[in-house]
View 1 (tube, one colour):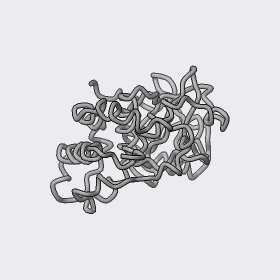
View 2 (tube, rainbow, N blue to C red):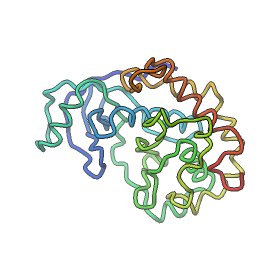
View 3 (cartoon, rainbow, N blue to C red):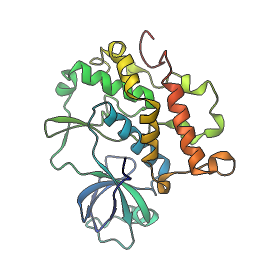
Length: 256
């Protein structure tokens, strides 16, 4: 699989202030991208999560905006003169993660969520369970409608284990993660158990390795010292965690 495209940010149009990480809409030579900034509070580990989850979701046939590396070189022309945003953009000099802008996309309405296809809702809830994503709630479903499809966005809160590698033990991957009762699609994800085996089989070890490999070195944050300070070993640790988490019975699937 080819590496993520690399583009230069040319101009900042606006910030998305509804998000706590303050992503920005930027123009590049390849069009507009929503850029998640490395200088935000969660740092580059949130960008690592965005890439890995997007790759796994696409392997399951779910739609996620295309990714690219976006280089920010201050001073960057901007239409937004907010000082906080300016400081964040300057703190994000270098490579950041861009997600292809979907012009005219809108958030799914509560009625659309309540009537979403049960198989699709189950696939979304299943992947969120695998990656321990806590950020798809009724208040903040992070689902967009665009081009006749449902698009998944905002996965920076997934893979929480990467913030405390020293606490990862052999049993850690088997933890249940966020309860389905808190999920935005809890009433529509009725086929989790029925689809579980097929979804797990789709995410072979090779697929997981390819997803992790798509994270560029610039977005990896190895813990200081120790074996995981080497990018290759850190990638292997991500793969090992997710592979162990996929072992049956899967703790996020009801009845497993």
